[in-house]
Image (cartoon, rainbow, N blue to C red; front, side, top):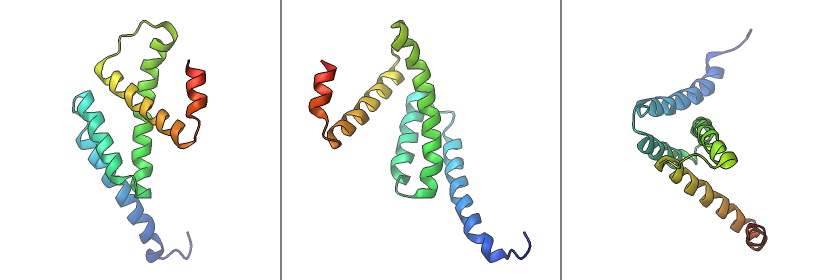
Length: 117
């Protein structure tokens, strides 16, 4: 761009430096076993959830992880023929916990109980 000065680029460079740092951290743990990888991603997500620039990258990584989980769960939910591996059981518990926190915080526990029964 015409008239663009170096000092105008510095905030953007800083923002991408922070994001790439998180990607590098996630890249280092990529060869861990499934449960360890999930635990480490969760720790990273918890540690940096208050920083918007890092949260953007970690949310995207967690979205991809949940996509894998959901595609594995789809077969079980539709046919009932998928064994629940330890990783799926942990993710199921996490998702159930998140849903229950949402139900409690929105004040819809009574509704949930009635519909669940």
